[in-house]
Length: 280
Ligand code: G3P
Ligand code: MG
Image (tube, rainbow, N blue to C red):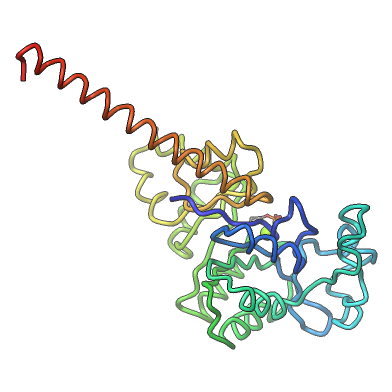
């Protein structure tokens, strides 16, 4: 079965990477939650997507230039809509999110994306691993990154870390190489999933390489594309709308059951006909 992961929490309906977005994701009963981490100027792991605070808060500037105290003064909810529902929502620390997920009884997979592809945060991997190992969280933690160096560092710090290589561009050799280094999972774009499908069909020798690692596809919000990801057989679909993806998955499962029932009853009828005709 293809798992459903809520991208930056339930980002389609709540301000991304905030506690309300994660709470909504837990309530949707999806199997996984994805979030992004950066470091503050005083070395705190912060949950936010962009390198700058501008798009998702009432502040301006690079995350790395804010101390935790300064970042906590920002409003990360009001930008989302005009309803005031999320006014005053703060950028959470990763520790706060982990504790909240524990309190809410989340038992799925937490995908921590380490945002080191544009800005280098020295020591971020060590801080992350230390925090993850600081408690027996009741959910599984997996890491992902566009930056293979970060994945390599995580592997050195934790031999058992589950790693996902984030890729949106096509470079077969690079990906093959990376498979050997970080072979746990591909986290790929829709475009790349299409490419994987072609490779699987046209180059049988590539199949085992592509299938050796798990494959999670992002960021899929359109029902047609969701259907394609389910039919591709991805291990997970990463979406801003987990409820939509879960409802569609149930729909597809019922359609398959109906088809099997239809085929079985058709088969039974044919057997009956043959019996009546004395063929069986
Ligand atoms: O993990 C999938 C997705 O989050 C990667 O892209 O930019 O949304 O972090 P982005
Ligand atoms: Mg992300």
